[in-house]
Length: 98
Image (cartoon, rainbow, N blue to C red):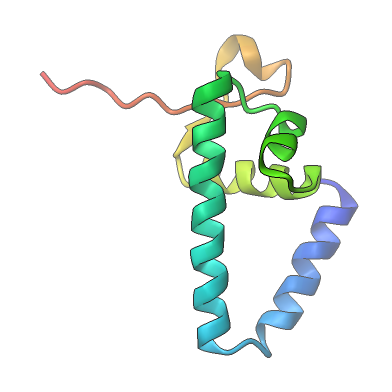
């Protein structure tokens, strides 16, 4: 992870101590919307290139990387073989039920 992202996370953590429950709830709602838009952009383009996601959502590249990392940690997307080397992430395919 880049130093800028780690610094932003540290600043966010520091500010979180002062945030009210209402502000935290609003942020989580907003982040949920960004996550949904990210998944839609991945489905539409077939890839999760951070630059492409940033452009599609009108957010910074570091923000796109943060959201993609969060989605990956939650198992909602996962790096796949051939595209992993290109730095792309694909949606996690759920096994079909018999």
